[in-house]
Structures are given as structure tokens and as C-alpha cells.
Image 1 (cartoon, rainbow over the protein chains, first blue to last red):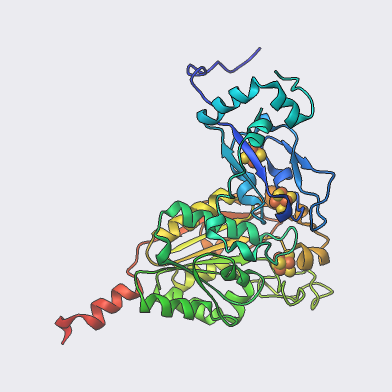
Image 2 (image 1 turned 120 degrees about the vertical axis):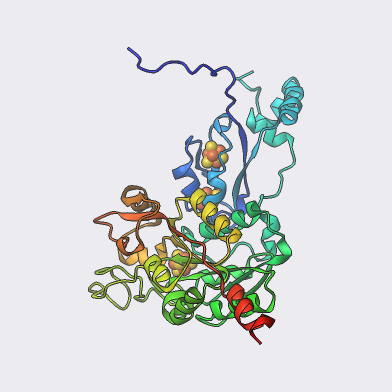
Length: 113
Length: 282
Ligand code: SF4
Ligand code: SF4
Ligand code: SF4
């Protein structure tokens, strides 16, 4: 039995979404962003940056909620998120229809589409 | 999908890049050092306060945290050891329109510069003092400091520190600070909010930020930076309004965080103008 009820405004609640950007060569590999991202969407990249550290890489980019926590806890100004605006989503839709672009970006067609 | 959005758009600048002297980045702070987090919270607060950039200045003293003044893209000054507060006092008196931030470490502000701090607090000099407390002298190799916890190991206390450390918010409050808060670097949002409130408030504001020093303090106390953050996560308790005399840092009891003091008192400049500049007194 479930004790909670569905909120009345559940259809109206919008979860903000974000795009995470990483400036790899600024990173010193402390791992704070990975450890404390509330959505646990980051992990260490296997590759090295110029300074010899493993920067983070986004493993599940669709789950970023644009909370900016990684942005402020990062001591190196190396990671930040930007809200996915409607305008961006629109431009994405156009891109999304373009299969060549998908292949170019992912090296293969996107299985989610 | 977000992957493609990212690829589709030119990568924007980091939102704090305009407040950074980008040519000086990467900074000298060690991997896992918390000073960068305290600094980025501070820049974020400067941004969200909406204050005019040309009126915000940053002063720091010597030590790892003292390097901050050299990285901020504002008028800033890196003073001699312990002298950030008197320099900031001079700036404020010379140009009362300025919003003066002192960003420095526990050694600089409470040991070498301890006297300056208590007297600026006593006078209620209008400035915001951010003290990054890493529990030791990091830059010089991890010697015991006035903030090192009892029994902690440092290069100069290999058997454990026999002394009792300062409780920084208590000193600031007892000396007369009108805004006092303490956070750890995990509380990025709270630090940002406290600094923003302090910037917009008149009077002497003091914010302590507990921060890991994995290279010097951590290494000798078998604490990686991740361990320190885990300790913050598990051992801290937020108690806004707690009396500063009751918030010694004692991991056994729990480390109390929060905004402890927020009073309205006339500032030094207001009192000086009223008493020493008013024509009615002549
Ligand atoms: S903005 Fe928040 S959810 Fe997105 S990556 Fe950063 S910490 Fe994770
Ligand atoms: S918090 Fe910053 S420096 Fe640390 S691993 Fe993440 S991106 Fe790198
Ligand atoms: S010595 Fe400690 S406080 Fe100084 S930069 Fe390194 S980790 Fe940070």
C-alpha cells in the first residue's frame, strides 16, 4: 500500500533540465562533482587531461537537473551547467531529425530516437 | 539528448569567468583543496548580490587562501601577512562607497592578524571577512595553528596537538561582529547566501568556511579530501541562531554550522561622522 497521494499539480510541475559542460584542462581530478552530484550522472573519464588528471565525464546527460551544485563545489571552475531553454530544445529537435548529425556526434545512430 | 545539445552549441564560458583573471587560472591550490570552492561561492555571491563591480574590492593576506586576491577580476590587493584587515579599513575610510571583502585564512586573520581582526570587529568596520579555516598552516608545510584541533597531528605536533583551538565565530562575536556564520565547503548554497547577505549588510560580517587541506593537514591525520567531506556530511549539524560560545569544533559532539548572529548596530563610519564631523559639536 502506498501512503502518498499524487500531487494535484503533477502535470504542471516542470523539472528543469541542464546541459553539463566540462573544461577538461582546468580539472585537477578531486572527484567532488562526481561524489556529490545529486543525480549521480558523472564519472571519471578514462582519459587524461593535459595536466595528467582524469576529468569527469557525463554518463547520463539526460538526467542533469541544472542544480549547479557541481559548478560551485568544483574548486577549479572546470564544470558548469546551463539550463536547457525552449529555444535550445527546438534547435535540438531540428538536429534530432537529422540522422547524419546523430551519426557524426555519436559515431552511430542514437538508440533513444 | 543533452549530449547532442551540447555538441550542437558552442560551449559557453564558465558563468564565473568574467570575475576571474583567466590568464592566472589554473590557480596554485592543490587538488582537493577546498579554498577554490570557498572562492567560487564568494564570486557567486558577488554576482548574485547585484552590487556594482567597480565598487567591490577584495583584500587578502598571506597564505594559501591569500592568493585569492590575485585571481579575482576586481580591484584587489594582496597585503603582507596578517594585514588584510587594516588595509581594508583604510580602503573603506578613504572611499566609503566601496564594498570591501577580506578573503584570507585562519592563520592570517586570527594568529598573525588576530589583533586587527578583533579591533575591526569592535569598531564595527563595515566589511565582509571570509575566513577559510583549514586547521593548519598549509602554505608553509602544515605547522600547528591556532585553529588546529586538540590532539591533531601536524609537522610541529607529531604526537598530537596539546593545545585548545580557537572557536572563530565566538571570537568574532565577542569582539563585536554584527553578522557571524560558519559553513563547510559542502554547503555551497549557504555560503553563497551568507556572503551575499553580508555584502548587502552594513557592519562587520564574519563568515568561517571549513575547508579540507588534504596535502598538509589531511595527510598527517590520515584524512583524504573525500574523507574530510564525508566527515562534514556526517558530523555537522545546522543550528541557525546557536550561541557562538557553544559551537567549539568537536567532531565527537558534532560540528555546529549556521548563521549565528545578525544584528543592526551603527558602523564605525556612521559613528565617526556623527560624533567627529558634525558641526553641532563645535
Ligand atoms: S548541475 Fe546538478 S544534476 Fe547536473 S551534473 Fe551538476 S550537480 Fe549533477
Ligand atoms: S570538481 Fe572540478 S576539479 Fe574536481 S573532479 Fe570535478 S571538474 Fe575536476
Ligand atoms: S597546502 Fe592545503 S590549504 Fe594550501 S593549497 Fe594545498 S591543500 Fe589547500
